[in-house]
Image (cartoon, rainbow, N blue to C red; front, side):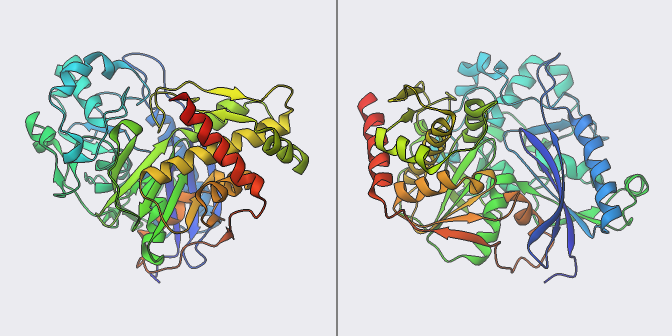
Length: 458
């Protein structure tokens, strides 16, 4: 174990921003600060509120450091986000919100220059979900501002720059459906050279590199030791995966849950990925390609359960299983394994709140099972993040895959993995309850009925 023990992890998710204090000796979070994260919907386009996030980060670091001296800082963020900065590190354009549809207006032009799926493992996605499409749109629409850019940074490394003054990039974010990275050659894609962006790309460094100590002004602002190291950081789903890469024997899968539910298979069955169903090749923190699939499950859960308590009874579950109350995909369209299908309910008349919650949980588990199937998943599946605490989700995932599911105990699935960047990276992953597929055949029957209903829609 590294001498560094208490690691502050800056974790910027699409819906919530967090700063967690991780005790590496215990592989657990000992403190957490959280704030809601929402884009600023004003000119020149919807963008991330980086100054509000920065104030939250600094306040949280100061607050946590008063409770327990922080030994190091690590960073993890959602994907599909990057920064254009000038020579002084200031943004030359606001950081675009990937749910903004502006890039779609230049879709034909972008499609003419983007690399094929076989080169990058990146499917063509709508809105700004391909980071290359964001930068392409910004360059075309704001050429004068774009021309002032001295560096292109991925989102975790933008925060690292603000903390240390050191500009860097890193492969897990570069390899997250950006069109910017070739995972097979471990180099920038042909798009970067075609658009003459290579000179803008900050140097690629390992996620575990110490970029430097925090800037003196930040040490004074937060009370942290002036020599507190900051690590390069990584993409959030890959942070969830890292502990398992270091500890688990393949084959296994990890499902990282948050705004997005990302399913990653390690050592699974060889399978041809279907770019039309939101499968992709992620790049893990060790630099290796990882077959992955995703859907916006956390967002779907929030929309579907808004204002609804999560209380349910075993009788509610039994009623849903017997009646085959089914929610079919997709609540959030444009991504996921069924991107062009609209959600619909079957056998849902008269259901109460508990039954509705159970059916929603089952839907999310079955969508996850489809994602795991699409990437050739095999062996046990570990669920990280909020869905690990949903017993109905975990049970139906085990039933629908026919394999054990481990529900991680970590409150924030990404924080332990991100903190490991500050360790010797030889450690057991966090504990979790292992659930085998339910003995009651009603669970598997329900999963089969859902699949049949989905297939019948074509």
